[in-house]
Image (cartoon, rainbow, N blue to C red; front, side, top):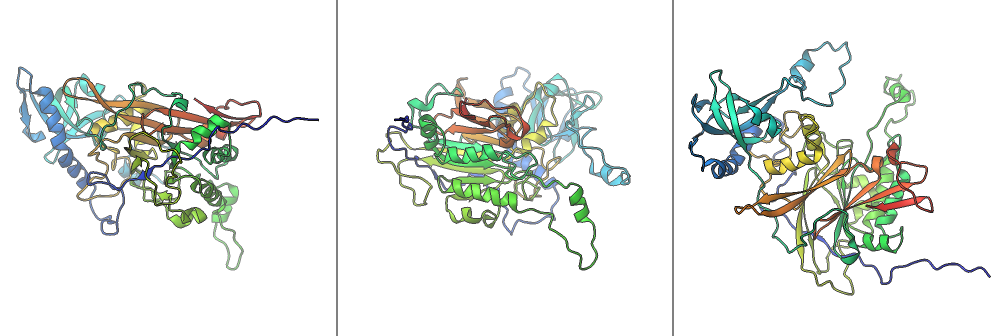
Length: 522
């Protein structure tokens, strides 16, 4: 008689822990544009003036703490045009990068449109670039080795210490930025080890899962990997260890590029041509990618809370901040209160505690309560456009995507290159991209590869203070990578999804298991 081995199951019932979205505070940035402020008649110069006013005090405080102990006692100059020649002084202003390779709208308007436009450049950086410092009074050119070492981009607020040269340039000997702002949430007791890829078997902590770039509807879809992802997050795939880790995921964040850009082939070009009256025409847009995404979201939302952000390739507005998707786009998934359409960027305050959530699927109580204290984490999530735009300004190496994301925290600004080379809304009296508080977790989607780093602040005694976890989330359709972040310890894990003989979107082939499928945890 043939005997079959029993299917391994968890030793005890698995129950997903609780996490809830906490209401924002007065310091929490809002990226929503209401009808009252939805006006495009204002000049973009207002953003730069507002940014300088709001960040001047923070930069001035850091500069005084940095340079007040110098023997030469440098003079503080309130305006750029008040700089005195041959006298050591420091001034605060906005950086402007004068780059010959940077796109110029006037040149684009004046070019011969009978000739196809050249493809967009991968980098704006070249040896002929110059750095300017400007305020409401005027502009001065910054020179010196210290300027090239700082790796600046347009829109950053800095304090420059130096002396004006006979040629009218400002020779910089040191620079200072605003530095990390105070952290948004109260500090909790955590382990001293915050390494990546720690074994979660010894803890029962809460995780947040992050993916980006599903690119449903692309010419090389990753349908098999996406289906495996859905089954993994809903607890229907993997062994006992996989199901144990999946049960600790409290919510899922989709950081942009869920749908693929529409690509017109020869048939698409024919469809765009004018037709005679009465001739039949088929719609170019296919609803199938959106229907497939809605079906996956319905399966996921029935198991855990889901937050979805628009991205560069999604059917959403181009300018930042991108506004939330209409819930009606996603069919049955929109019926769940645990389904959240967020703006891009988005700021989330997530709390993990033992309280039963009033919203279905926002949290599920366990029969055995955890003895861990409640914890609230602030998450800043973007779909990657600001970091990718700043990447064009800087030479690589030494700059990298992780270092650029870390610099935005020290500059206290998420998108300094907006509105110069990154489209954004023409705000009049505020700049929502300014970071008045530092998040605990900074998630950047739409990246070409996975990366993570801890960015810490230094207190007055020189000891390392609190840290912000930066995570670069790669495109799932290209890499098959799901990122897990521990909400208590800020440890990071990645889960790789692959199918034998297939690769995620034509990328690097994933490792396979005995049965041909693999979910590799690293």
